[in-house]
Image (cartoon, rainbow, N blue to C red; front, side):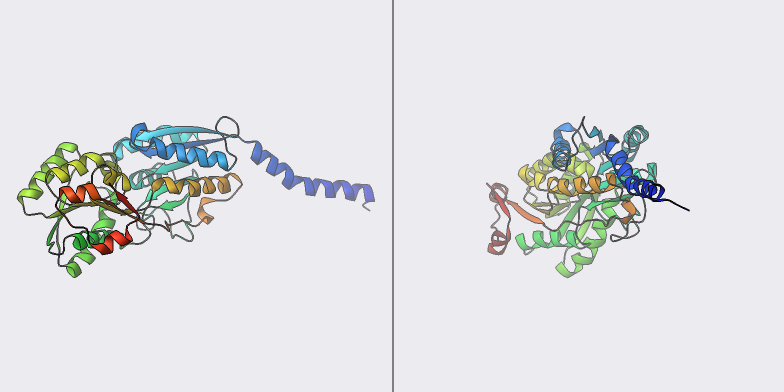
Length: 327
């Protein structure tokens, strides 16, 4: 027969078990890797934004977590080398870009992973569905819908009502190309536009591509978002302007660098969401149970100086809709 003292001791043990587990979880110094495309000069501000938001959530480097920043080059082999080097040394991975997400899935199917700015994680096989990822990955997408590229093409058409031929600049083998071309090929017939794909892997390729575009009657260029085009966005924008080709992008940085127009989400704005995922995983949640987030705000940015240099009149409808006008 259990006496009162035995019962209370047992009850104390039962009640203290969850508290002990929570204390043990909190006491663990989680090792977190942040692996982004490019280098410190191009994406360092994104890594710093993630670190700052982790700190706001209570996870401070050197105190409650350890952070290891790594950067990968714009090719699958380079990304895989960086990821294979860091994965065994960390407890949680934050990986940026579609290429990084795809390679990370190949490198590990067990390490909790939060991706940032991938194009279509379901189509890429990173998650089973947005609502129920079902594996070791979850995170934030770059696009909110499959038709975003079609909308970027439409923006070019609004600028140039007589537009008939558009060059599409992208990297062969980049998973973003598939998503982009499917959207563009659905939109192009409705806009009476012919698409010409120019694949590039180096800046020399980009220079040749622009020369071919101009010689081949291309009237404007759409740049597919990706690791390579993001890292070289300023140079691509300069070449578009040199060849007098209006250009549209998915990232603001390219328009700041001289591109004509962009429609996309600010990657830095994803940092609070990334930090929230990390917080939930550290507290015991599984990536498989955390729904993928999609951007809720897409900004339309127009470079007025570039429009003037190209001799373009900006339609009033675009001026009204623009979130930012760069002088």
